Figure 1: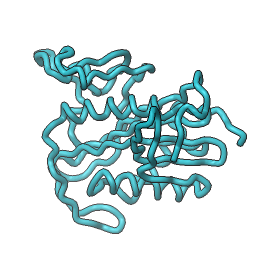
Figure 2: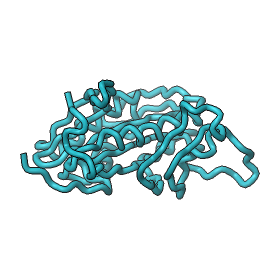
Figure 3: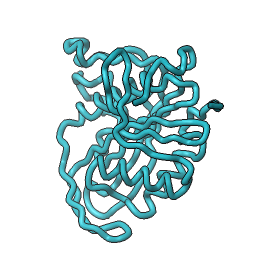
Length: 231
């Protein structure tokens, strides 16, 4: 199979920009019932824009005899993109979308764990992108402003301090939870990732502002394509 170099700046399966997919998605779905709803709707929006890109949900990835599951694998004619999603919400209710639907979002209280799990997604994608023709995208969609807002000057030490994902932050190196008190939560990134939140939708009421964060992960080019098998 002929492979092509992939764009590490948010190109999906070598065919279309992530920004175009997000724009298409937002035209009909300004909000989602769940993370699974977001995943399925993203795959549909991608197909509407680029029918030659095939989407597969919950794809097993095997490395070292252990199976992990990827949220979405997008397969184009000459390149692929592995995507991990996070959908973290505060309470919001309303009727929106095309067709109009009633939404009642629950509040997810543990923003610190949302940060941890998002960083873990990036680490996972660094493992999964072991093909020269496969890049990755970690995507967080939220209406919780605490995730994109920098901590105040008077903010004391918190256990997730090194895992902050606010606007303008750079993620790189080894990140330790509670200054290393919980070793199992330590994450080491091989890449460096500047974080830039983008607007997604603006709905009525408290919690009606949604933003998304997308972190592109480049292929790991110093290993062979069969360093990770896709089942």
